Amino acid sequence: MIVTTPNVHLLKKIDYPTLGLFTLITASTAIALPTFAYFYDYAWIDWAMFVGLYIFTGLGITVGYHRLIAHRSFNCPDWVKRIFLIAGGMALQNSALKWAAAHIRHHARCDQEEDPYNATKGFWYSHCGWLFIKDPYHDEKYASRLKHDPVVLWQHKYYVPIVLTGLAIPFLVGYFHNGWTGGASCFLLAGLGRTFFVLNSTFCINSVCHLWGDQPHGSQNSSRDSWWVSFLTFGEGYHNYHHMYQSDYRNGPRWYNFDPSKWLIWSLSKVGLAYDLRRQSPPHELRTR
Image 1 (tube, rainbow, N blue to C red):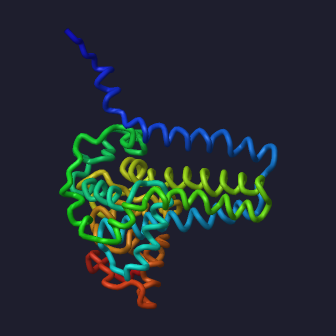
Image 2: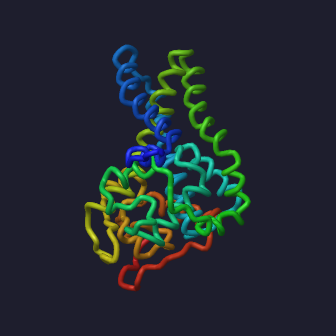
Image 3: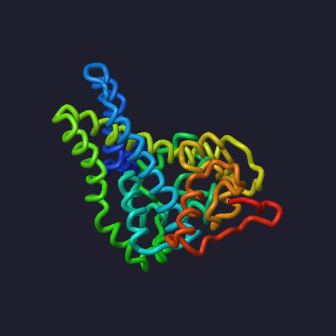
């Protein structure tokens, strides 16, 4: 007779490949980045690539994965959509198909057991712990609409090459600037380091913005507004507003809200590269952009 214990069941629930990958990224960032800085330091081009790729990949998540694919808050030509999905793929947050399906379920089942990053289970679970557990509530219905989009399917098919490209670009830029040492420094800072910081800034939306902050637009769920998370995530920190008005292309509805994602979408619309911009805010909240 085989006796199973709770510990055995827990071990079977762990997603070991994802856990191993994120452990490697975290350890490399915590150890390799400061060690390299101590012995060699980073060049201006490393920092320029870090900032550039942080913005590029971060907007790929906020504008591409989130507002375009998950919420359809605007539309754009396919070639523009491809650029956003390439940028989002370089952020190492799964393909747009899987990311958006989980996010759609988050809104549909917010704070309930089926919520993939359920904040009622605590900070670390909603921040990143949910990634390391095999999802028992996976439901294909949340991906059904997404599977009709050929650009989403294209990005899903080539997701791994896109991730590798995001790591190869800083290495090649650094290599052509200063040989192997330059390649290593740019790879560490703008490749691994940038990936780590973009991941964790995005994770703050699932954790911080469901635990701490203001609820000026409603308290039906745990979503909250956080201006400093908005600063890190190009406007995504106005999360309470977003949960109340999910299809609005703006997360920060007022003109003074720091929301570069809405400014980019609005700017693209002025040159014909975005259209069908959706607003959901009530009349007293207009006079925004």
